[in-house]
Structure formats: structure tokens, C-alpha cells
Image 1: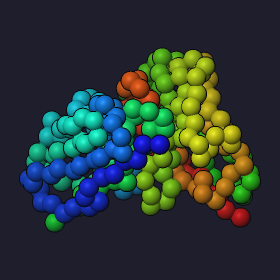
Image 2: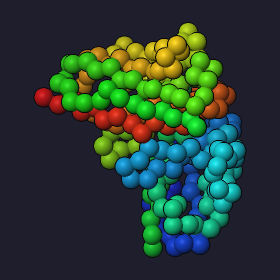
Image 3: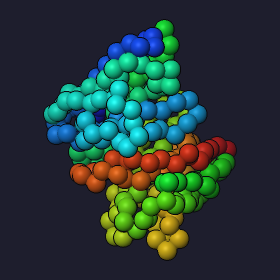
Image 4: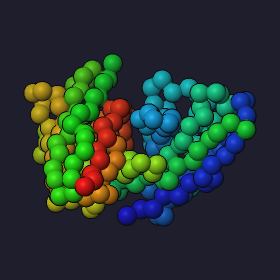
Length: 107
Length: 121
């Protein structure tokens, strides 16, 4: 199985900050990388698929980049509703696997 | 709008069985691949299974292969997960999800609210 790692595991930031989360795959996954946001007690929400394509309705302050094994999720200006846990997922091969998550909380 | 509503969770003893359902609306169900994904309490996400629109193709995670069976009823716009030989480590919130990006192994675009399965004696 392809192993996914994320860094940092958690971060504290302020409203308006630029936030970057890194995701690394144990082997190349082309651009088959998705990002999800999850708030406590809620279902995950899809943000980005195919590395950089925003799901419908997702604000443009979210962006994704990368290829091969290294990927990033960037929030250009953190908003109060963005405090959550973020997961990356590779879907290049079965089984699709998720990273362990990055918790973004308020500084 | 797309809606996915899971049901069927609950408390079951180790070795027991449970059948989860996911009622869908707001999209052409038979055109869409669907998945089950779970999350153990306080843990991350684990992909479990995937089924094609016609139901002819399925995939499973090794952790559930041979114990869980995914199926669908396109006439009723519903997805199911039959879970047998349940173990304590199967305790989790189970989500159904629509596969939006069909490239490669597929990635979910819409998720249900989840249903809690607790396996305990």
C-alpha cells in the first residue's frame, strides 16, 4: 500500500495567515491526490481533487499543488471557518490511502 | 442537491453482523461509483470499499476483504454494506461517499453524515 505522511501534524495560526500543509507519498502517485477538510463531529468535506482542482463551491483561498510524491495545500488567508483537520488522500492505486491529518487551530 | 444519508449503525457483539444502508438523492445514482470509508474514534480515515455504477466491479481493503460486502440497488438509489464477523477494531463511524473523480482508484466528492458502529461484548 502507498503510505501517506503529512506535516506538520498540527499548527496554530491566526485569521488572515497564509497556511501551508505538506503531504508526501511513499511512491509516485502522478497527480491523483485529494484534500479533505473535517470539523469536529462532522463528515469530511472534499476540497481539492487531482492535486489542484477545486471542488464546486470551495473558496478560492484554497489551492493545491505538487506532483509525483510531494504535494501541498495552501490556504492563502485563513478564515475562522477554516479551523479544522485536513487530510490528503492518494487514489493512484488500490487501496486509496489517507494521510494522518493536520489539525489547524487558533493561535 | 446531492444528499447521502447512512443508517443501520448500532451496537453489535464481536462475531456479529450488521447491514449499513445509504439513501441517496440529487444525482443519477446509477451513473456513479460509490464508496464506504470509516473513521475509528479519534483516528484518521480508512477507505474500505468501492463499487461501480452497475455493481459489476468492486474493490475492498484487505482489512475487510472476505467479511464485508458492498452492494447497491439502483432502482432504490441505495448503497449497502453487509458486515459479517465483526471485530472490536471495526468500531468506527462509517461514511458512504460518492466517487466524483473516476480517474485511477477514484476520490470522493460528497460524503454522508456517517453512522456509528460499535462492536463490543
